[in-house]
Image (cartoon, rainbow, N blue to C red; front, side, top):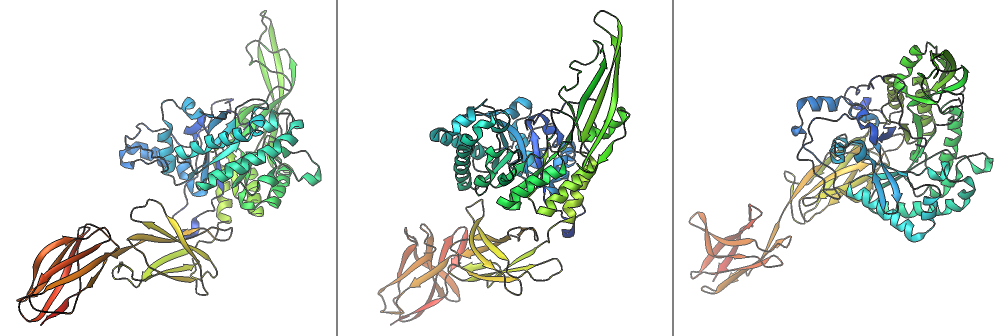
Amino acid sequence: MSRKFRIAAIASMCAVLSASLPASGIENQPRTIVTGWIPYYSVKTVMPFIKKLPSSVVQTPGAPVTCEPNEYAPEDIATLNNSYLYTNRDLMKEVMPFWYTLKSPTLIRDDYATGNPSWPMIGTLCLMRKTGLMIIPTITDGTGKLALAGYLAEPQIRKTIVKSIVDLVNKNSFDGVDLDFEGFAFVDPNTTWAKTAPNWVLFIKELSAALHTSEKLLSVSTPYVFNPTEKQKGYSVYAWADIASSIDRLRIMTYDYSVAKPGPIGPITWIEKTLQYAVSIMPASKVFIGLPGYGRDWITAVTGTCPVSAPPGLKAGAKAATFKMNYANAKAAIDQATPIFDESNSEVTYSYVQRFDGLTAKGAATACTLSRTVWYQNERSYTERMNLVAKYRLGGAALWTLGIEDLAATSAMRNVALAIAPDVVMNILSIENTEAMQVNYGDIFTLKGSFTLKDQSPIVGLLVNVEIKRSNENSWTKVAQSTTGIDGTISIPVTIAGTAAFRLTTAGTWERAESVSSAEIVRVLPKLTLDYLTSVKHGAQMQIKGMLLPKIAGTTATLQRFNDGKWQNIGASVVSDSIGEFILTTSHVHRGVVTMRVQISYDSQIITSSEFSIVVR
C-alpha cells in the first residue's frame, strides 16, 4: 500500500505452498482470523486461472455472481481446489481484492481489467464466491496531491463520491468496500491534516450510512495512529476515534516502518502500541493487524567502481530491493548468509557482501563491493503477531499480500487460529405441532431450538435470531429474537400465511462461534371455510358460500354429493373472486338428509372440505 507496490523478483521465486485443510470434525475448525489483499497483478498467486470460462457465469444486480461447477474441466477443478484461497479458506471470513483506483468523483478506475485482459473479472468473482468468503474490494486514491482532500471539503462532491462507491459495490454484488486512501498521509503535507480530518470524518459517516442501508460493510485501511495524549508522531489525519462508530473494519498497515534506511519491517513493540490505542476507542473485533509477506534488502555501502554490466543504481541509500517471504530462505542461501532472529523486533535480519566484476565504459577492468542488509518476517514473527490477535481479541490479521508468505508462516497462523478457536455451538431446529411439516392456514405451530456446546452442556442466555425465507424470496429475513432458557432451548409459536423455510442463527463472539441451524420448510395448506343453511325446503335453491384462505382468486370450486356409496359432482363448478370467495348452488326435490362436500383445485392439488349435511324438509 504506498507503499503497496509490485514486489520485484530478485531471482526466480519459489512456488507458494499452502497448508492443507484440517481433518473434518467440528473440534478442528480454526478461528477465522486471516484475511488479506489480492492485487490485480497477482490474482494467480491465490487462485490460478483455469482454461475455460463457463458460459453460465451470470451476474444479476443485487445478487451474487454464480456459475455451474460441472462446466469446468476435471483438471481445472483439481487446480482450483489445490489453490491457496481454497485450501486456506477455513482460516478466513473475507478477502480484499486490490482492484480499484479513485481517479475523480465520478470515475473509479478498474485496474483488474488492465492486469488480466484474458480473464474477465466476472469469472474471477465467480470462483471467489464459490469459497463462501465475503468479497470486500479495495479502492485506492489516485487523484494527486491535495485533490481528494479538496473533494471531501465540498458536500456535493462528497455525495458524488459516495454514490460512485455504492454503485460499484451494488453493481458487482460486493459485500462492502475497503478504502486505502494514502494520499493524506504520504502525499499531502501534514500541515493540511487538521483541515482535512473533519471532512474525512464527514465522508466516512456519509459513506457508512449509504452502505449500511444496503447491508454492506465499510472497511478502512490506514497507517498507524497513536494515542494523541502521548504526543507521538502518527497519522492523525485518519481520526480513528471519530470514525470508529461508522466503520466495520480498521486494517492497520503495521509494516513499512523502515523504508529509506535499513531496519525492521514492523517492530512488534511499535505494532502493539498502535493496537493498544485502536482497541481503546473501538471494539477490538473491528481491528486487524497488518502482516507483511515481503522483505527488504538495502545497500549500506559501496566500495570501488561498479562495471557497466552491473545493475543500475547501485549506491548507498538507494531504494531497497524487495522480495517475497516465500523466497527468503532461498535468498539467504544464495547470499551465503546466516539469518538471525532479532527478538526485540521479532524479525529476521542478516548482512552480506555482494561483488560485481567487469569492465568500465572505457573497457578497463573494474570491480565494486556492496555491503547489504536484509530484514523480513518469518513463521516466528507471524506467530508472535498472531498472538497479539489473541491477546487483544482482534478481528484478525490482514496480509499484504495474501499468499506470498511461506508454508511455515501459513502453518503458524493456522496453529494460533486453532489454539484460540471459539467453542462450537450445536444449533438444532425442530418444528412441532405439524403433520408431516404441513399446517393449515392460520394454524399455530412451534419452532423449537436447542443450543449446546459440543459436550452437550446447554448454553444459557444465548440471543437467537429467527429467520424466514418465503417461497418467493431468495434471501433470509430476521423476523424475531429469543433468548435461551436454563435448558439451552427456545420455543416460539408461529403462524404464517404461506409456505416458508425457517432457520435459527446466533452471532459469533470471541468465546463462541456463530451458528446456523438447518433450514426447515413448513408447507401451508389453504384453509377452506363454508357457510350454508342446515335446513332448506325441498325444491328450494341451496347456497353454499365458501372462502379460501389465504384469499386467492381464480381457484375452481366444485360441489359433490354422496350418493349410492360414492361422491358425485353436482351443478356447475365456479371460480373464486378477487377476495377468494365463491358461491355454489344446487337444489333437491326429495325430502331427507343430503351429505355434501366441496373440492377446490389449487396449485396443482385438490383440497377437500369436511363433509356436511343439509336437511331437506
